[in-house]
Image 1 (cartoon, rainbow, N blue to C red):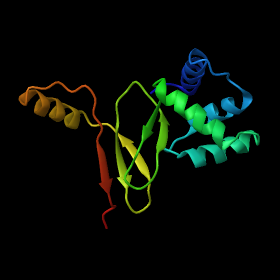
Image 2 (cartoon, rainbow, N blue to C red):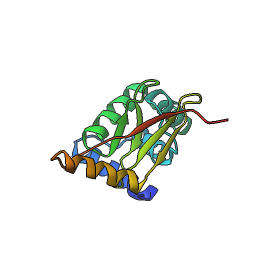
Image 3 (cartoon, rainbow, N blue to C red):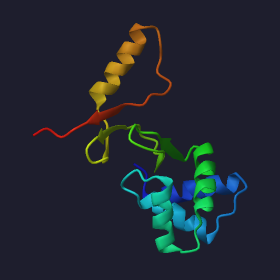
Amino acid sequence: MAKAGEKTERMTRALREAGVRVTRQRQALLRVLTEAADHPDAAELHRRAQALDDTVSLATVYRTLSVLEREGVIQRHSFEQGGARFEVADPGHHDHIVDIDTGTIIEFRNDRIEELQRQIAAEMGYEIVHHRLELYCRKRG
């Protein structure tokens, strides 16, 4: 997993390469994205960014997220339980468990699952280009 400074630099570079100015407001949003341990939606990102800089507008959040997603440095997730959620794209692949009672999203990686998916695709004459696994779960007991 990339370090916070590397993530911020990658997002900053992506904005500049897309011709977008890296303003104080956008820097606040990048910090929030980098520090997020969860998968916040745009409204939550806006709330957190405003806590750092009260001039951050929701429009700036949406425009910035759009550019960052298009540039491939953040990922948009559309989990069944609501609107789009965001996370900084990491070179390492991971899947998600969504707790259907609390809405908590847990990242995990399992080499056995990854291998089984490769085997199934190969048996059917395919090579995996991209995949996403989301498990919707409820705590036992």
